Length: 417
Ligand code: MEV
Image (tube, rainbow, N blue to C red; front, side, top):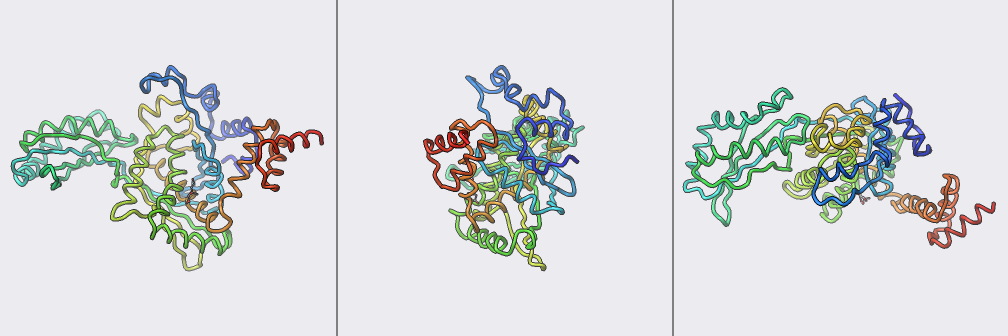
């Protein structure tokens, strides 16, 4: 395994060369990471409608992640400074043990809504009596995916008493392998719907995947040792999590910090981050809105952090196949399946949360933020070399003066020696 320590000190070109060697990227794959290889307009035009351009995000690598004994460098696409650094720092503090993670089989829930039923009891009875036939019809539309272990596993019915009358909802449980599953699931639902109409005498309305993927969860945990992070950080994280458990205003931000990391990996790998967000927050709301992470001390007084959430993410599919950057990101990460990707994402979410809570509850996050802000200002004012940028940023931070004109004069002074 390539040594990524000090990765942040390298220039962009040096970092690219390092990751190219470590992940065995071809010239073409490495080029896909540079501006020149980013989403071409012709490709963008075939992806969505009314295209006039493409939006770029910085892509960075989170280092120091050991997950179930395997090292991963993790591509993250995010515009917010400190997110990647925070993940790296929290992951480093778990070493040498790193994270433990696991994930469920990729089972998605697809829902069919049936309305205008004359006799709801009769309708649900008929569905139960014809279970084998319904599953047979639904499975018939999964034939081409069966060799990847995909298939319709089962279904359940429930009755909703609504203001528009009773409705029967049929929830299908469908294994989708390494795909996100929306296309597969929605196809099955639309094709099985006519038989449900026939069996119930109702009107089929919605036929759509649910983003609350409770049968496709990932879990991760890690130990942050007292000897590494200190008593103060452990106490701070425990207090911070308790705050989130008891206050929804804090809990929203607590979970946002988790999603900083998870979304960044979802975007880097070409995944549908809106469905990931919907799944995470609706899962957090089951019962009442709660933090997605948990913390407690072990008998040695060290801090154990854990996370569990639905992660319906893919390593195959049209969005990934059509994005050279996403494919390269997956190769760099070294994940072979959607389950593995979900495990990595759960670890990143936990790392970002630990980093945020330990910083917020001790020194605060503005110091780190302002340092990066100072670097941005230094570059904006014309600092060219990394040495110049650091020197200007250092001066602005220590004087706590981030004014552009001041930055310009600092740069001039540095250049004059
Ligand atoms: C900022 O993007 C994320 C944090 O607000 C998360 C948190 O407060 O836990 C720092």
